[in-house]
Image (cartoon, rainbow, N blue to C red):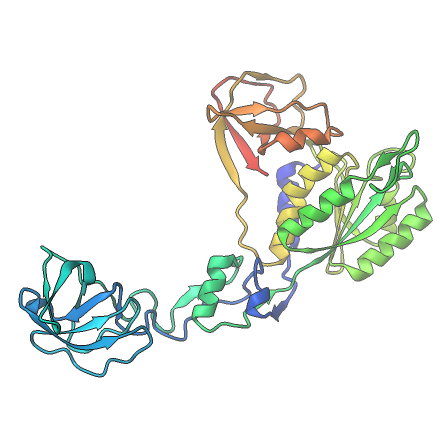
Length: 391
């Protein structure tokens, strides 16, 4: 069996970018930048008033100041502020030549209609200076950035209306098993509804990849092979669930080998998720995940998700945190890494959620994360810090 650490490194070593494309700025949310974004202007592009007030010379603020013009945002000042003069100015407007301070309206009083006096004790300059945030030619967003709304704002501000981003992978999802029926059907005796596919489709969407569902492959090797062929031809990544263990109908690894898929690992020293398969064929990636829903969920988060984010060029950092355990923990066997669902309690500590095994999908609904208990560890005392993968 392959250790989890080795499996993870194998996947990282296989990651190759998919290529690039340009998208409209309004369609760029959650896409990954393929190149640095450079500012084409200074920001602010001019000395800008940070307040509604009066622009004047600091050396004159103890004097009466004569009003000479009003400057709205978007206006170009027409006059230079000279000794004992001021211009009324709005927030965001260009500070006129000669002025080096903006006095807030609240700190002034009007005298004789066209004069004002500063009545405060002290004041900042209240000017946002040209290029104090960004200089023309500066890198404002770096390659690998996942574009959130705040980054879209930066794109707009520097005129990058068609950013270059990494292409999104198409991810084929295939469920296997004659016992499965779709959620729209009432299961007969010995049947269960297919939850894995819809769980995986939405996990894929969370990475911003594009899922394509190929339905349920019944326990027929020829039928399953046809569906796998179609998915490989149409997708960048193919995920199968079920059919990868040791049962009479678990023939997925055999089909993959027949298709000349290079199987890089087939069993992992983890619990749950032992019968996890990963391979490549050309530039395509193939995952065979266990059929139990908790296993498939966890293996997606731990292994598939990093690959999908990696081929999109995402500078992904695994969201691990350390937290103390609320109660003592014991396990009899420790020959595999244990991934177990946990929740954060009101005391800021970890509690294991009720968990009946890898088919107990409801356990994930109450979980805040997956705790990782290393091989060889059979006992953990209350208060010890544990490694948690947030979900």
